[in-house]
Image (cartoon, rainbow, N blue to C red; front, side):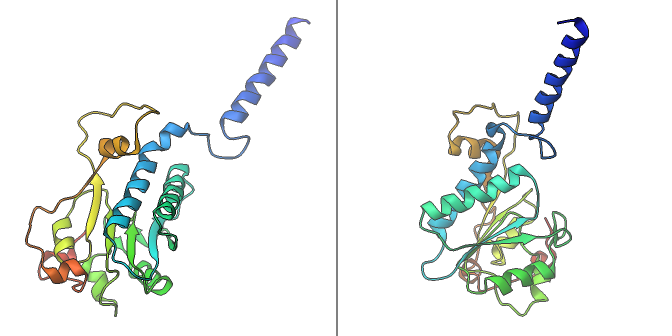
Amino acid sequence: MNSNVKLSLAAVLILIAVWRLVGCGGGQPKVAPVAFKHYESLASTAARIVADNIPGGEGAVVLVVDESDSQALNRRETVFQKTASSLGLRDVVVIKALPGEWSSEAGWSPSLLQKVLNEAPENRCVVSFVGPPPGRVLKQSSARTISPYFLAILPSTGNLDAFMQAGIVHDAVVPANLKETPSVSPTRSDQDWFEAYYELYLPSSAAVSPAAVSGEVISAPGSADEVQY
């Protein structure tokens, strides 16, 4: 085999390796399973929080997620549903927040709130990976409450105390205050991954009214009306 043939063969093998690396042609790059771990831990922990806290009775568990082709975000959705089902929460309604229906700065739009109310009016709880709707959006709606139980996954703490005192949010998960990047290990448990990246938010104010906790109040006087996150 002459040198030109050898070089051509080597080039073909390199091209095949690259083609496989990027997902067998045209797809997203393949991601090592460990890269999904903290997303999976967030999803499974959220499902367990819901199972421990939602009221009994009939009604769907509503999962609000952003429309995305991200493998990590889609894996998060899949793991939530799988974990919820294993805990006896089999009626899960997934609602996709389309571009323009929410933002990390302004929260839910009125159209997203209406979509949730239309598709699952008798829900037992709402789990939102796109935060909660601000009080001003709720005031524009005829609904008195979104859900008996609302778990929000938020990019920051923002004015969460106001959300909670207003009865809009009952529990929230926020990013942990990372001092260094957690070590990546496939042997970490879900709990370890969750505690490395996230934390359950605890209100700084203990004075939350029973009405707010039960979800009967949709906005409180003051900052909750204009709260953003």
